[in-house]
Image 1 (cartoon, protein in one colour):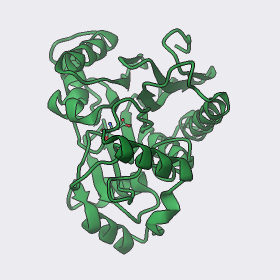
Image 2: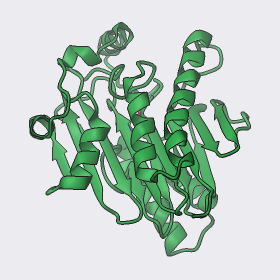
Image 3: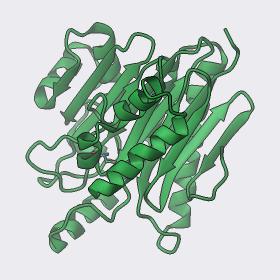
Length: 307
Ligand code: ASP
C-alpha cells in the first residue's frame, strides 16, 4: 500500500455564465460535491477500493437534486426521466453499464451489481429495471426523480423547438485511485433534456463516457454525448497514455480539442494509478472537485485553482 489515494469528481460541464448563475444554486451544488468527496474519501482513506469510492461518491450525487443524475435528472421529450450510468474497475477491466432506466433509484449501484454478477455488461430500458428488481435494488415511481425546475426546462425547450445545447449538462462522475494503486471510474446521468427515441448518450458507454484501466487512468466525461461517442473519448485518453506514452493532462486536452473540432463540447476528469490527476473542459465552467489525504477542494470556473 502506498498510502496515497485520490478522488476526483465532476458535476457536469456547462454553458452557465457568471451572469446567469444563481449563486444559491451554485453553493448547494458545491456542498453536494463536497459531501460526495467526503463519502468517497472516507472509503479511500481507510484503505478501501477505488471502485467502492467512486460508487459511493456517485450515489451521493445521484440523490442530490442539484445534478442531472438520479433525482433531479432532466426530462426526456415524453416527460419521463430515463437514467444512464456506468462503472468500471481499472484493475480487472470489469464493467457494468445501464441505460434508459425509469424506476431504479440508484443507477450506479445497478451498474455495480452488473459488474460483480454479470452475466452481461450493458442492459437497457425496461430490461435494466427488471434486472434491478431481481437484484433487490430499490424501485421508485418515475416521478420520484422529477423536480419542478427540470419540468420547466423541458417546457421551455419544447416551446423553443431546440435541444439542450446551451444548458448546463450536470451529469456526474467520479474517478479514483486507491492505496493499492488501482483506479476506477463512475458516471451517471439523466442525459439531455428532450432526448427522444430511446436516445443513449456517452455516459454509460464504456470507452466513450466512462473508462478505467490500471495501465493508464480512470476517466469520466460530461458534455455533448453524441460527440464523445464518436471520439470514443475516455478510451482515447487512456490509449494515448498507454500506447502513445503521453502525459495524462496532454492526452485529455488533445481529446477535448478533437471533440471541439468535431463540433462538440464538454469536459473530462482523470486520475492515474500514480496519483496524477487531470481535468479540462471546453465549456465556460465545470463543477469539479478533488480530494486526497490533505483535504478536499471544489471548483467551477477555469481559473478556480483546485488542483
Ligand atoms: N454526456 C451526457 C449525455 O450526453 C450529458 C451530460 O454530460 O450532462 O447524455
